[in-house]
Length: 398
Image (cartoon, rainbow, N blue to C red; front, side, top):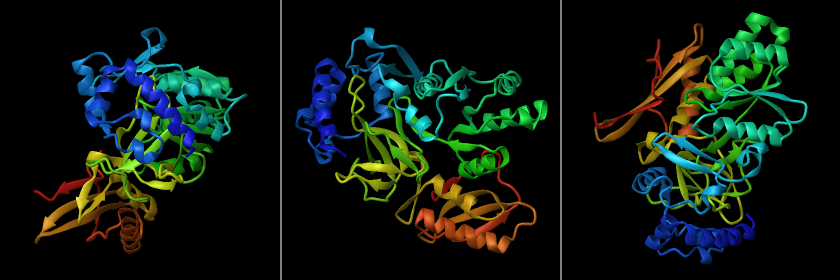
C-alpha cells in the first residue's frame, strides 16, 4: 500500500471532521487526530465503528448521524438499507468501483447486460447499472421479477451477460431454454450475488450447465465496492480501500491468515467510512508491505454466525467447503455441543443416491479440518436436513 493513501486519508479526514460533527465527536472520544495518520498503525489507533453504532447515531440525529461531510446539493441519491440506515450517493465514477469487476471479466463494449438487481431504495441496481455503462456495455434495467418478460428480453435482444441472484439466474436460464430453445441462450457471463450454503458448488454447476463464466464482488451499501474477483483466489481489494481483518471484539488486527471481521477505510471522506466494521468475516490471503490486506478470502459468514469451538471460531463457510469438497454431497451441517467439559463438533451430511458414504465421510472430515482448522468429532449420514437449515448450530449451552 502506497504511503500516498495515508497522506490522502490524513488530509481528507481532517477536512471531513470540520464539516461532520458526528465524525469529529468520534475522533475526539478516541483521542484520535486524523492529521497525524501516516501509516496503518496510526490508523489502527481509531476504534472500529460497527454498523449498529451508525444506526443508533442516525436515529439520534437523522438522517446521517452527523457523518455527512458534503453539502446536500452534492448528494445525487439517498439509499435506504434495512434498519433503516441512510447512505448518501456522492460523486464517484464506475458505480463506486464496480466497473473494475466488469473489466476483470472482459465485459464491455458490444455486450448487452440484463441487470435484475433492485433499482429502488437500495443501491445494488443503480451501482451495477452505472458500472456496466462505465465499462462500455449496454444495460437493460430489468429489476426484480417479471420472469417471463425478462426471459423474452434475453431471447430477443441477444443478452450476453446477466446480473442477478444465483436463484433468479437459474430461473431465467431455465425459462429461456424451455420457452425459446437452447439456441436463444447467448449469455456468456453472469455476475451473481453470494448466498449461504454451497454457493461455490452452485456456481460450478451453473458454469458447466449453462456455458457461462460466473463472477462476484464484495460490496456494501455503505462503501460501494470493497473487493472483486479477478480469477485469482478470493477477492482483490479495491485500490482506494484500506482493508484490515480484525478481532471482532477488540478491533485489533488478526494474524495473517486468521479469520476476523472485515474492517474498511475509504480514501474518499465525503461519506467518512473510516475503520468501519462490515460485520462480515474473512481472512487475508495476501497482505501489503504495511500490513493492510491486498486479497481477501471468500466471506466466512457474519461475525455473529461464528461458533467458538476449542478456542477456534468456526464459520459457516467451513461447512460450505465440506459440501464442495465431498463427492456426492448435497448438504451439510455442523452442530457444536459441550460434553464432559469438552467442546465437540459433529457433521451431518446429506448424500446423493449411490454416493460412497465411506469416501464421503473421509473427504468431509479432511475438508472440515482444512477449512475450520480443528477436527470434527464425527460425521453422520442423514437422509435430509430441514429446509434452509443453518450451516452451523451452537448447542453448547443446551
